[in-house]
View 1 (tube, helix red, strand yellow):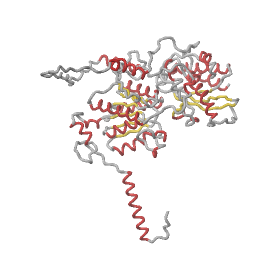
View 2: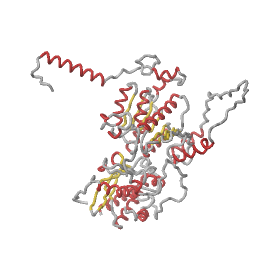
View 3: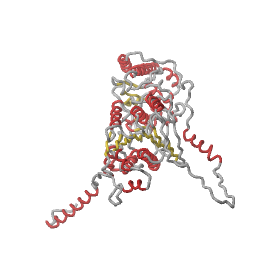
Length: 167
Length: 398
């Protein structure tokens, strides 16, 4: 989620075309297919540019997503579980990505651990409906949030490095 | 604790009696629930909780106040604005209140009205319903403890609004008192689909401005017609490096907005006065802009466009003609040649107000030009979802 590389990263995520939410029985599979293609392209780009930073998968309907993301600071890897629902108002409104384990640990979070995206991401999303999808929410929403919040939380001693048995 | 073993039987009896008395007093103070009242009367006695409300009829303000008992109101979001809104409607003797919220009461909410510290940890709808039914047991209160924006819950939400009326039909009005864009769009979607009138309310994150807005599907702008204030430019990481909390709040601003919301709801339901289509409150200047927002014919919401067509094809409502022209006062003699002069400063009545209004909206015309983000490729959703999910999973494991 490198800051200087973002322009290139954004170019690597294909834009979406179908404006459909999960209540739209006919068009949702098409939108979901576009979402998955964009996520695959973005994940592949991250891997080839040595910037792999999250895993994401969904339920069968593509309405609930979960996985993990990680942030590396001073050669230490900090990993967090992430989850979110696709709201009925999607894609007019962006998905609200949550990191439940950080709930209550930072002010830049809403109830249930939903990260605060109001200022830096939601306006951008609003101007790019329906072209932006989940991959964009990761790259432009969660990515910058982690880059700002995690170092701050580590510095304040609120989160600590945990030895992981597996990655 | 005093030592009971050394006490005589008589002393123990006295002790038990005094404790029983204390317990009875404590119980009665906690459970002082008045019996239900079958019919609202305007009888002026201390024990009638409706006498001051029914006096509105005598004063010529409301024609039929008792009608309030026939209305069912949905309050979505029982936070700083919603809880006070629910309390006001309860005290007004509304027929039915349907509450929606999935949050819990927290000590961090105590800078606002209504909830009390001992309720921390309870669900907001549960805590509110308990307090409200003590205040007025005549009100039928229904609690819904879930997030309305998820796919699973939205249908339940629609169904509740559709059947929540006191005669089995839809609710009479929906009051949105939520604190986020997603939930507002969800309420908007539901009300456009079900053709239910609703009020939007909000208090700014900086706690010093707020607004209420009446949304009549097809007749006034829906929430998606006029995109809300989404104008932050580009992605700047510094913009999220805000110190302190995401949102500030004041009991004053929230109470004022709840007051405006319920006042206009009462005017709408009981048909008195004029209902303001949009009323803003800018606390720092004590400025209250009002305006009317017309629906957008190219609105993104298909149901909004449908309601607009329906509205266009309906005959226009007759404007009530009971507002008599004020008669000009003509004096028989005017020996001194006294005339009235307009003393309003020129800039105050024209540019000043508009400029202030504009500065509150900070809204630029939506850009019709090229998208702000360039991307090299566009996907189209032809591929099979299952095989794509498998590919993503494989990629995740590699």
